[in-house]
Every structure is written in structure tokens, then in C-alpha cells.
Length: 115
Image 1 (tube, rainbow, N blue to C red):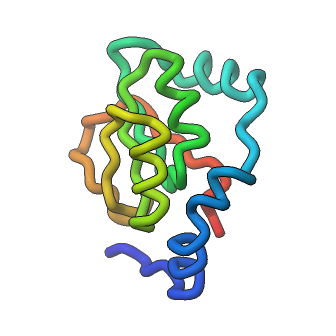
Image 2 (image 1 turned 30 degrees about the vertical axis):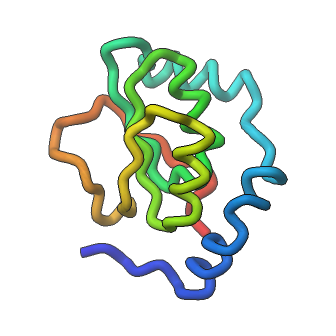
């Protein structure tokens, strides 16, 4: 059973999705390199980026060659993500209720999504 997102958080991220994309920094190259190595991200591997927001980490994972499934519960954030990272599968969901099948991915990432 999914834990609902607090209405104020949902409202804020919905209304501020574009500003979040403009103002939120990306991730350091060293972190991306480490993740890629540790998770074995390369063509033929699939990773779920949970709480993907506007795709700041998603786009870095895609650049590693892996298939990325972005999971994000806020529609406004998903809309920005779809524009920022065209071609990536973007699903509505949360960590508590992932909208993907068992054993269908090789890795899961969650970057700063516990708010």
C-alpha cells in the first residue's frame, strides 16, 4: 500500500516544477561515475529512478547507456521530466508502490526524494 504524499508537498512540487528544474543543481560527475560502476549501468541493464522529479538524475543514468524507467508521483514534475529527457519511460508511482513488475529491473536509484 502506497503512503500518500502530503498534500502541501504535492501542491508545492506541482506548482513549482519548472522553477525546480531551473534552480535545482545536477549531480557531480564523480557521483554519477561511482553509481554507474557500482550498479553496472550500461546497455542491456535497466534501472528505476524512483522519485525522479524533473529528471536531474534520470538524464545522467540515460547517458550511461542503461534503460531507465523514471517513477514520479507528481504530474507537474513528470511533465517537465518528459520534456527534459525525451524517450524515457515515465510512470506515476512511489517507492512504496512501484508500478513495475518483480524482477524487471537490475537496479533502483533514489536521489534526494525523501522529503
